[in-house]
Figure 1 (cartoon, helix red, strand yellow):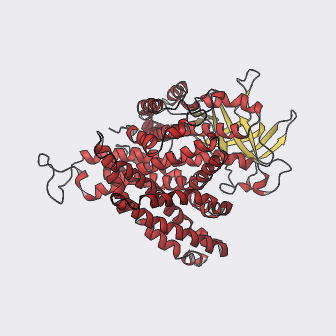
Figure 2 (cartoon, one colour):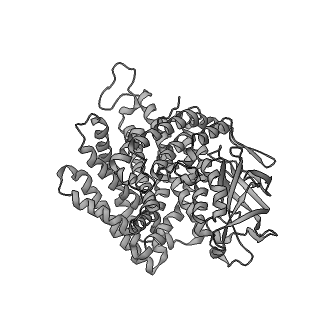
Figure 3 (cartoon, rainbow, N blue to C red):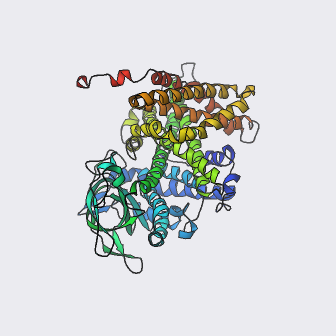
Length: 594
């Protein structure tokens, strides 16, 4: 029987030991986020995810959402679970107390988000989009809109969406055709069709707030002519309650490979009433706030699914009896040894562990810098943190989502034929994970963003926020012999990353296709080095606690770090060779020969 146990011990390790939690409690508004309170919140979140959300994961996948004449019904149990979710104040965990939220650090919220993605990714879609809409409106909305909508979004009483994609445009948002014109009362009437709108219609909340990209009549062509509008499903009445139905409707929902309990909608706007958010023709700036949050959220989906896949694979490998160990029988009292004794099964399980724990560390690292960016009193500190977040966001989106799909597939491999059939439920993890590599900017686009925008930004300032602390850590720890198995491989891989960065910067100036052809390999190389840096730091902590009461926990950290350095990090060599080979074999291939 499938089960899920939130990895609370590892979350505490990341929050309190790998990083200094006192840096968070020193931030304005975070004074109450003590380790004891954080631990209590994580415990309660684990109960919600394990007891309420996880039991609905498979049934939600089997039933899916149902569309009938413009109305969408979520699977059985989802409404009740959502009611418990908002009753517990979970949607407002990191929202401002000014809007009824709890004002907790975003770092804590990220760990809760991982649990939700592990236990029920489809359910988490509704909540995640609402948090993104809250942040975009809080940053760019006028005071009147914020006063009306933010408290209800923070509570989860109302939910949010972002409406970007149209039939003729996905990545290239400059092709958007949805129109917005002034109506008689000074607001706007929107006309157009949006597709692939997650949570565009459902029965969980009493209102749905759409953030919609559209063009004004006098809009410049292309990306510079897009504005952002708030379009509610129900127009608020004089008391701020859902009133008249707006003319925005769900024409259909998609029949998808995965996340079937998340409604993916075609939305029609037929002179739907809307309000401008931010300045005219500056909608992309506002929407990117929501999109960047969503990209980090997609990364957490990859991590969450990887964690539940890992747990499932370990449980099965301990129980499944097949063959005998090639080095001699390990369990003479049983008709066969459990498959966990076999080297290749152990390789898969360790790969899963190295990814999930490394990704959790990186997610918390970035989340901490988001907290510093948003709350630090020092302007330079805020800028430095924002730079690092800007740099690492595409890496998290791609490396985590690719990893999540890989780990889900390894889980199926551990199960063998029992993983390929529906009875065990693990095939759902692969189906659900696959979308994360596609939406919120396909992974190839994110790699282009890294090499085309982030690397050259501000004369390489973003890069320095990563390169300098990594080099400083290497320099500070090179002289410690016990750390050589971790520091030396990190230093070698980091050197490759530095050389590859220079190569892409120089060749890309002469021929942009050189940077484009290397982009995916470069992002993977960067992700591996980032993981290696964090694993080396975790190994150092583990080595310092080998005689503690929890010696086994710390010993496992050191052993997993060693596995990462020995068996995963060497991939940087192949990626480096591919990058340095240039673009010729890709670009020079005749199009007609494809």
